[in-house]
Image (cartoon, rainbow, N blue to C red):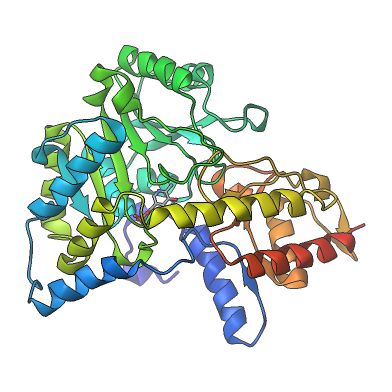
Length: 401
Ligand SMILES: *Cc1c(COP(=O)(O)O)cnc(C)c1O
């Protein structure tokens, strides 16, 4: 690095999102004419439903192209408030809602508002790649709370209790979880709520995969289960995953007014407001409930079943059925320690390199999420792509000795 640029110290521990980095390598290979099958993506392959697009077009044509209220247009806040009441039975006021440029942006600003340098943030692991870096960027210290494969990666209250330190301020929950798909059962959430109260924690509950659940399972928000916890929780959600709207950049947070107000102040000095016409589109998306979403869920369900069968037919790979989200997170430890010619596959990173080079298949090594025995394969992609991807993986695995 050229030190004459004087980059700030806070960058020293920061790394680019490993999933986005792998995706860009896959894109580069594709640009060079190599037929790569990319399963790194955390975004739906479906197009945004037409009526949602139409709302943005109408907003654009009518000249709705100026700054809006910092925390979101009243119409969108109303739609969000209706959604919380309808789906989760939680009642919020407009002063308890803030709309941002994606849930990732919401999360960053919440960490900004809550974390002092040196504060400990409890992060159940495996965890989505952006949490640790967002926490670090805000001076926080990540305290991993191990979630074990033998528990289906569900956060156990006892594990949380054992991880708590005197400096613990914030607990991050992500159920259904990216990458494992795990849903925290209601009875565990109730016990977690007791721990949160006792240790005076604030919960950030990332519920972006709230609706992507399988086998009729239910998700509950900790904020809806225990009334006192509602005022210790900031729920984060957005339209990206449920409505196939990743590029629109609309996410939102709901929680106690003082925290939401702090987030809004930060946003007023950094982003001003989320995109005007995307907010209009989000109103239609959120008000649609599950009309557009239902067929997408049916499709995810079929793909999940297909992967369960085909991945488990590969020697060395063991996939458990995810409760929710759209990722397979198979255990690949049966392949570690094997050799490809002179090369020894020692780690999941080695394995991901091997798959990219030999199978032309891009998967994210579990180490990116804090798990050294798993790989993440997104099934938010076409069945044809999944079939071909699995076929190549099987062929490549057969080359290992
Ligand atoms: C995709 C994802 C997000 C970010 O969603 P955006 O609204 O597109 O920023 C947040 N949390 C998790 C766990 C995700 O997988």
